[in-house]
Length: 183
Image 1 (cartoon, rainbow, N blue to C red):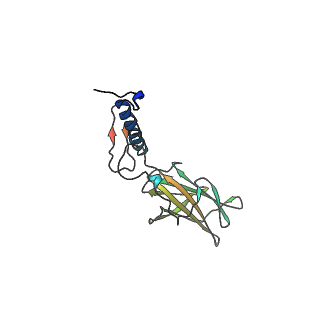
Image 2: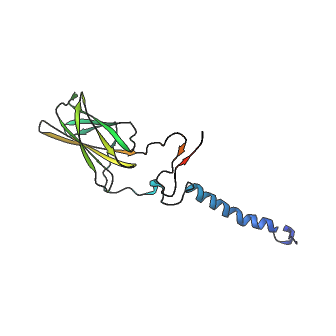
Image 3: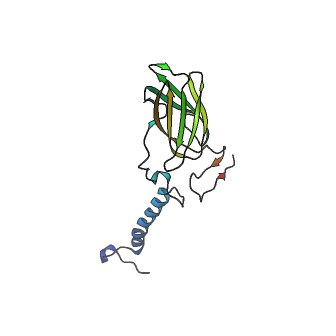
């Protein structure tokens, strides 16, 4: 086997292979890491936001809704797919508003939503609603009392509930399956 040396105007054959193979290996590693080792649909963060979706405040933020001040929270505080308890504090002139009609409309961009009536429970209004899938949601709270009406808009992100201990989830990638891990 004959090798050319650097003095002969060339590189060793093994060096040439390395120079060609190394960038190819880097590209493959970057592609695997960038895709999270998964194939199929792109990551949810790569989807463009719907331009028609009105942005609202984060849950727990007080908002002015007509003559009312509204604060919407959830239990759990970080909503997960499934039944979520929604709690609205409704104030007017720094006093709790009693006997108001409070409705909550939940929707995802470009999808039909659902509406529930929040019932008065002590000094707040509450109800449970089904958050059907993971992703960005808009929650509109409409308050009607004493011939006045106001609406506050909130946004939140719902996540999938965690699988049981010892299980892994592949998220929104349909080609993945959950894997059980022995403890």
